[in-house]
Figure 1 (cartoon, rainbow, N blue to C red):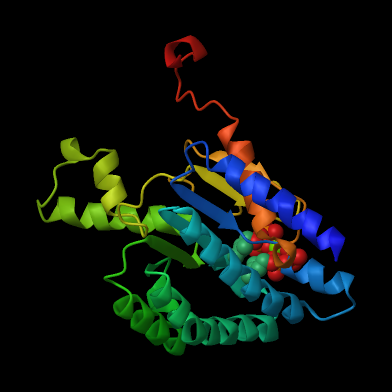
Figure 2 (tube, helix red, strand yellow):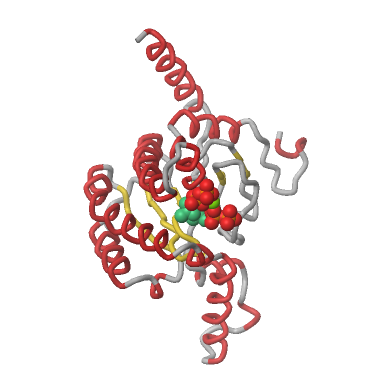
Length: 257
Ligand code: IPE
Ligand code: IPE
Ligand code: MG
């Protein structure tokens, strides 16, 4: 009992400590390690995905409580279709049930849902549920939760170039006018602010085709914790680590001071 009490006190301390400095405005997370989490417990991979959805709810609620503006979660990559059929099917089922169950959490916390990826190629049931929740939460304004679904950064860039190319062909845009703003307007993420902090769980240190354009100047944070075990405390640690960094954007330290 006492141990829990002490742990709660440390947690409070860290939360109040990170409040003293600016938070990252946009946090993106590669939620990885569900399968290994389950395997370690002698369970099938799907068990890890189920447990992972609980971690999603907790972290979403914590981010909105902290006042983070944008949270982007990598939920399903274009490469994830190559997994065993049954796993893909279960992931889609989990997605639908999470959307159905969590709409209340989103409304209660004033969170707007947004999705990025090749959404039109998702199974119709997922697409419809997604549309429904996006529509229902469109006026919410405390935080935007961006779900990367059937997402691949290279696919996003290809799509962006095609859209811009079409507009050039129709004389809607001239080549000279193409700049970062124009690119941003044609990404799946449509005008999403740059990512400040990118977190990847499970010990892997790679990007796996996530947000290549948007993370150009993000701070990267890798932790060995498997996603289902990722708690508020781990998030605070990541934010604290971020706050200790000096973001120079090409300038010198002296210029910043
Ligand atoms: C992340 O966990 C969830 C998805 C990619 C959908 P994984 O399923 O990749 O878990 P590991 O990496 O195999 O442990
Ligand atoms: C990245 O994780 C995709 C998601 C978290 C949705 P993966 O587990 O699919 O990535 P790789 O295959 O290990 O690079
Ligand atoms: Mg993985």
